[in-house]
Structures are given as structure tokens and as C-alpha cells.
Length: 502
Image (cartoon, rainbow, N blue to C red; front, top):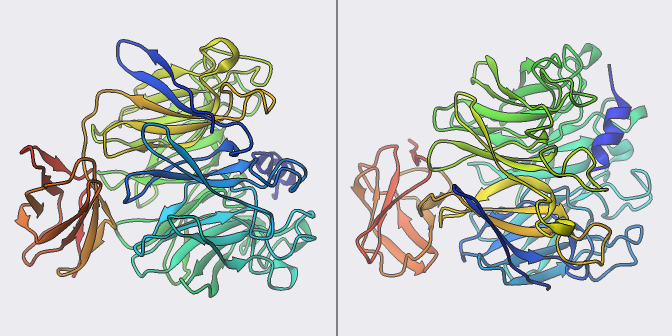
């Protein structure tokens, strides 16, 4: 039931600052940066840091242009919300290369952690491109390689990692697309792993451990830790029907398959998010009800923690195809992108150059923007990975191609901001903690803040900067939103509840 052809398709995913504004009656999209290959090309998803800047990798380009097949090995950059870009480092392959496109994470120690799907200490393995690494990067750009995959014979420790998350225990959890103890002849079916901050790796699960790979194969996205303390994730293929799975795995490695896709409800699920109603939401690259795309145009779905799945929308190419998992914004609506489809085409995206959409929890979809809406696609082609809602209320994202530079065929990619009229909010870095725990609060314009409360219970706090507050979970606090009162008297609420743990 293993699908090597699908794997090949999946693996193929692999400072000039100009401004362009495209307005409609409901939203405004602004291009704030165009890459020119020397500062990277094919930018990936963004993460907001405590210093107020956004951080992300580029999949290719950078200063080492002759390496990694002559494409450049990628970069790590930061960019301010008004478009000032700083290249922090250019990867050289030995430290890893080709970041997959999922965002870095900022850990509780303030450093960034992420996965590089290729490169590393074993460049002759994994098809001669290297098997990938897990890296730590300081906010100023100092890189430390924490782990090189394929350190074990036959890559039983996994290969081609995609992303990591930090668990409530402080360790990092992630998946590898390939490697592991099973399907060795095919390059491995993938793993779930745990990595300590010092770099000790434990394989929690090897996919295809069940007959006919009923437990799935090739996890194509990061796991996420839910409010129940367990991790939830997806596999790209296999399962009972061959089209991918959704699974739950405990921190100790006990895996339960919650759903096996059957193509009509999707094919090739991506990462999950947990919404405010405790259900999970996600997207599938292919499958669904429409025949407008060869393998189906993809879906958006929700699934309960117990495994009941509902297809919210099947794309039909006119409204996009190959959707990315949407994020839930502060208005309760989900916002996302499709890599292809939509109203506009060019020679590099003959089936459509991608869209931005919003979808209600009940499944009503609205297309907000069609990329390549400008001459020469200077507004971008094929939006990358997920959107980020910054604490200023606006959405930030990247496009793989397009923009104003002619250094890359069809452009080197862009960073854009989309405003839909949502206001500012605050975000807690770590969404749970015990009474007495220190919590970082991210926001905009926090200088002079006069109060912080955890679900109405006042907290002691220190304003670190205009974008960060350090607060203490107060005695008597209960699970709920965190509120910050600014110097102007405005109360900003957190975008999700903070869980007070025993």
C-alpha cells in the first residue's frame, strides 16, 4: 500500500524591498519585500518573535549560491512588520539545507528551533542530498546543529525532518518524512521523535509498524500538542484506505489512528491546529468531491478529538487547489492559502497561481485574494505554508515565486501583509502553566501597560519592551483569556485561552 510516486511528488516541494498595494472593499494586500536570491529565494512560513520581528527560512538562495545543486542552500532571515529585511545566515549544507517551509518556533529560552530536511553530516546519504538536521538559532543568527539524522545504520533514527514543536515538558517533538525501522528498502516510512534541548534523540514511533501500513506512512507535517497533553498529527499516505491518516500519540509513544482518509474526504492531510472549540482543523492536498484536478483539488476538514471527521469544503480549482491548513483568527474565522488554483495563471502556474481564503467554522468559504493579479505577477505566485496573524491583527505570509526580481525564473518570492480589519491582541508564549510560572506575553505597543490579568485575576508583570511583557501566573487564576491594559486604556485580550495547570 506504500506509494513511492506520491513521495516523489511530495519531495518536489522542495534586500530589494518594494511595496505594492492591492485593495478591495474588504481587505488590503501589501507586498512588503521582494527577494532577489542573494538574500534567499522561495521564502517559507513566518513566526512572530518576542522582539516584534518576524523570522523565517528561505528554501533556496543565499550567499552560498554554488552549493546545494547550484540553487543555494537557503537562509534564515528576520523582517520587521514594515518590510525591513535582515539575512541572519546563509546555510551551507553542512549545517543542513532546504528548510521545508513550515515555520521555526521560538522556544521558552528565546532561541529559535527548526528542521532542515536535507544536508547535514552525511551528504552522500538520502539520495546524495543529506538527510537533514535539527538546528537552534539565536535571535542574532548564531546556529547550532543539535542533531544529524541518519546517525544510525539504515537511518533507523529517521531522515528528512520537517518541523519541531516544544512540548510542555520543554523537549522538542517532530516527525521525519522518511527513515525509521520500517520500509527500509523504500527509504523508510517515517518516524515521530523527541529531542532534548541538548540534542539527545528518542524515536517514539516508526510508521508502517502495522500490517499493510494501516497506521500510515510518511508524516508530512509537524505534530501539535493539544490541550489534553497528547500530540496529534497526520501521515501523507497509507492507513486503511491508502490516502493518509490522522493520529494521536502520547508523549511516551503510544499511537492511535483516529481517521483513515478514503479520497472522497481528502487525500494527503497536512498539519493540524486545535481551535477554540477543542476540535482540530486541517487541510488535504488532494482528494475531495471535485474532479477539476487530476487527483482532486483538496479539502478543509475538522475532526473531533475522538475521531469524527467532517469535510467542510472541497476545492474545485476555481476557488483554489492544494490548500494549506488555515489558522483561526481572533474573529473565530479560519484564514488560509492555496498553492495553486484561483482566477489567475501564468507559465509557471498554468492551473492557477494560488489564493487567500477565509472559511467559517461551518464551512462557508470566501476567496479574499487571487495571486498573480498584477502584471508580471509582482504580487507573488504560490503562497507558502500557513499564514501568521501578527499581534497587530494583520496576516503575514510568503509566496514561493513572483515579485519584482528577475534573478530567479518567475521571481524569487515575496513577503506580504493582508489586512482584513481585525484589531490588535496579545499572545502568550506557552499557552499553559502552573501558578507562579513566568509567561511571556507578545503584543504591539505594550510600553506603559498598566495591568495584566489572567482570566480576570491580576498578575505581577514587567514590561520588557514595546512587544513583550513578562508576567507571573497569579494565585487564584483560572483557565481563560489573558488581558493587558495599555497606556491608552485599551484592553487587549489573548487570541486563545491560557490553561492553568495543576
